[in-house]
Image (cartoon, rainbow, N blue to C red; front, side, top):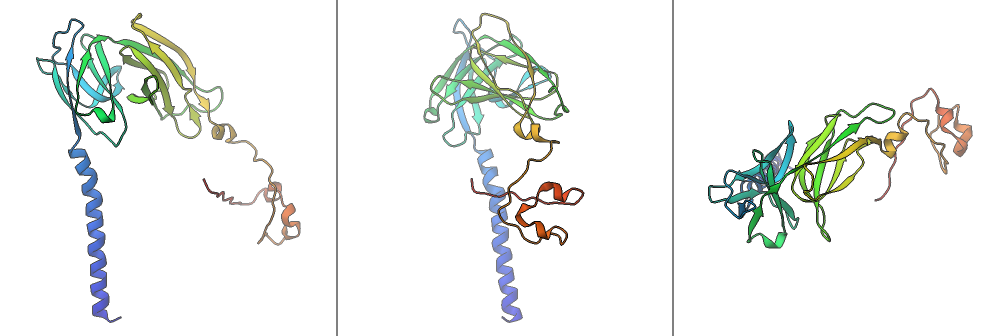
Length: 265
């Protein structure tokens, strides 16, 4: 290939690469700029319009209060148009919360009902809370998060809240309904899943003390490695070569040993 042809080929490749980078940056931005708009109305228990109420599909607990991650506020007539980054065929829960009066409501949004107008009737919010206890042994994870899911009979769970692991307590403000809490605390620890019901008969529901557990990987950390069965071996150090497939982990004590696990899943 001549220098000129090589230069043109390189230029064409750089052009294609630049276009791919541009598309990679543009497409996600377009999805973000064009969310689905859910419309509806929020009313109080008497059916009167509730203005100034925050409506969102995703909430976080921050400093003890519900905080919308993306949402809107109802007008004086109680109506709202809430932007939601709706993804594929996944259902979601649209939640309205008035932090001042501590009232709220949740409605299930099915993927095939995006053109509907949703009515949310405010009711008392119940404080569900508990204590996160450290594991019996080992360090408490400094990172992690709790996720609260709204569950519906015959339907998959819908994420409503997220909360950071503070290593001490947790709480959520919730309307009447069925809920489940899951967690992510890395590969070594987990917070046991909690399922519970809010029926509105109490102002608060104490979920008790929940101890952080070690995962199976966490329980194995720092333990002596199990023995292995070797079916074939090659390139052993000269002083261990005669052992062949009878080699054990103990034979490598005091040496560096890299073990690569692979398979098909």
